[in-house]
Length: 329
Image (cartoon, rainbow, N blue to C red):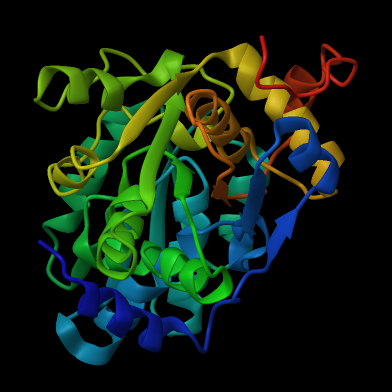
């Protein structure tokens, strides 16, 4: 398993290329909830998502000669695609990204703009089959979106920055898709602040991780989920990330209603563009805070800010701003 020093080395490797993203808060939200909620704005990261960290670390290691590479390939529904395309461009490596046909057009267009070849496939299985076939070609290096130690180590640099920016952190809450962000962050948290609780949140409609945690074995969803949280539409977590997820202190499943609710409210309160995958973390925050007896400082990782018009229209189809957040249902 990865160690803390792997995260530190990754940060040294990618620091010249990424942003040290700021911490935001809302005084009004803190008053309503009675706790100190801080937001690590990875929506302001390169390519608009924390995925830039893992993608950059993986490509940088490859470019440094860790393996022979003539072409980088990856599969993704969006943010990882942009991250790998951007990083490959930075290190002058050609990239091919396989994406589903129903992918967010904002993310697909951005991936192409970074210079990558984009290949669309009908569904997840077709994508996985195409990537595996392509990966067998000599000189081709596959960067998995989360089941890759280079990626996990890069994602862990988010937590390194958090502990540098915030003195005392009672809990870190992050969304769960494949589990790379939570895995890397957990490694850092356990080393720097063992008392800090690590909390994951995923969509109820894409709850493969929750099912896996309940059964003790990796569960794969039978079909691609249709949740608003498009960054968490993975069919299963990875064999590398699952052991870290099993070490989490709490894990919550957010309904579609709560995802839309918090996307609206965080956009309104923080004045940031926030993906629903990021916003759903607030459901877990509130569920955890409901059983706390003292005031807590919680850091929420806003994982991304890439959202297209169809998703935005769905999220804002019902106005939730007439119901202010509260810990009292």
